[in-house]
Amino acid sequence: MSAHVVDLDALGPLGALLGAGGQAKVYHAPHVTLADVPGPLVYKQYKAGHAPPHGLDAVVARRLRLDERTRERLDLMTAWPVRAVQEDGEVRGVLMRLIPDGYFQDRVKPSGVPARTLRELQHLFIAPERAVRLGMPAPSTAERLLVCRDLAVVVHLLHRNGMVIGDLNPKNAVFRLAARPCVMLVDCDAIRIKGAAAVVRQLNAPDWNPPESVLSQSSDLYKFGLFVLRCLSPGPFASIARDPSRVDAVLPGDGPRLLRDALSRDPGARTTAQTWGRYFDVTLTGVVAPEQGTREAERTGTSGWRRDPQTRRWVPVT
Amino acid sequence: MESEKAKLLPFYLVIDVSASMTGDKLEQANAIMPAVVDALSDAPILSDKVRFGVIDFGTDALVRLPLCDLLDEHVTLPPLNVRGATSYAAAFRLLRDEIESNVKQLKADGFQVHRPAVFFISDGEPTDRDADWRDAFRDLTENFPTYPNVVPCGVDAANPKTMASLIYPASGPKAMQMYLMDHGQNPADAIAMIAEILISSMLASGQSMAQGSSGLILPAKQDLPAGISAHSSDDFV
Image 1 (tube, each protein chain N blue to C red):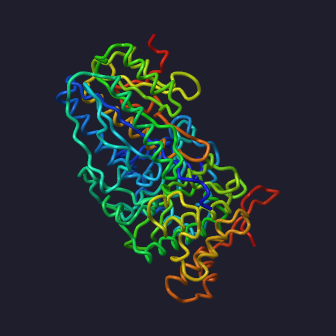
Image 2: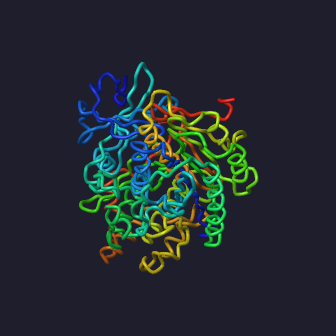
Image 3: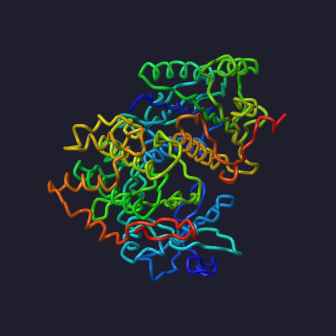
């Protein structure tokens, strides 16, 4: 058995069922600890017929090959599959970090029932007074810009390490406002390594489809543009908006142009996550940070990866 | 660019409040609307996709909740009360009128409109003449270009054969299903389970409504709550 696969038996008794979706169930895994993963873990078991074929191994292995600093950042910003879990030699699921408490909102539902709700990105798109009425936060414009900035950082981290997010959508990332970082990508199933096939079929969530049919880092950038647009113009039908002029008055400086580029039909013309990150930094601090590129490189620690055409192994880009 | 018009799915609950619904069943029926609101509050962007309305019927039929955005702050959920007999005909006629005027209104407001979805819940046989309710049903479906997708849900003394005849469309690629309470199940619990099915169907339909995909999505059979089973129209002859 390789270092990135564990046996289901080795997990010990599973804890509470935390969630169930169309393709998988997620359980607490209170008896598992891993030296390379901070905090508690959960076990995501794919339903019969939804177990991903190989490809998952590669996504798990990809994380383990990152240098420690980058891996720490990845673990803060995503619920990355940290180990594949197998039973009788077949991959049945993955271990992931438990989403930290800070991404949940204690609220009271309209019927009066108390609830603990994940602060999904979708909650940023509805009218602030409605969000408050539903017991969710209504961030200020400055806080929204901060969330945009932090999502840009997540996208940039994944892109510069050769990943394609694929299905960036209003449910698979969560935010918090109290402490940094503010955004965490919670469903990494659709992520693939650039140049390889996706673990599960990469799909477009409704209303998030890019003009082109193939999902790539460029389509991630298109979807990021839609997120910026919708997050900064909350209200009725913001969740399906595509008209960049909605936020002309909200985005200072270069923002309106960056957004139009992000939503360009030409995949090559789209604003990169790094450019967005710099833009939001400047917008939020009012200070141009020329050393940003260097600082970013230091934090991520690696300049990217590519497949060696001969060996098919991942090698650092030099 | 914002060239596409917003598309809305009108979703109707049509529910039996005849005398036999008294007690626990009525209590569960009254729990449906708050449960739908709670579910929408967890997925609030569905308000950009789905509109919800409620019609109840006994001796007559009434619009209890006009088609609306359930998360709108001005919405007040009406209490359901029992009244008299079980007129399917009254329910179908009123539903047809509502659909006709609601769809017209939504289009006038600049929306595209998906084919409406109807969950029809009954606990007994219709008390009007057979020909009456069958005529009214044909006017709601075959003779109506804006016909809805109809999902009948039967609990307690509802006759499976009668309910099966209300599945619409009954065949073809977009055939609907019906949901029946299993034998020996508590009818009030069954209503709560049907509410669960309605909610998951509404969420799934709202979330999948993109270009191309359209209409009503019903939960997979293996995901149904225990005590309820799904049937297609040819299960009862």
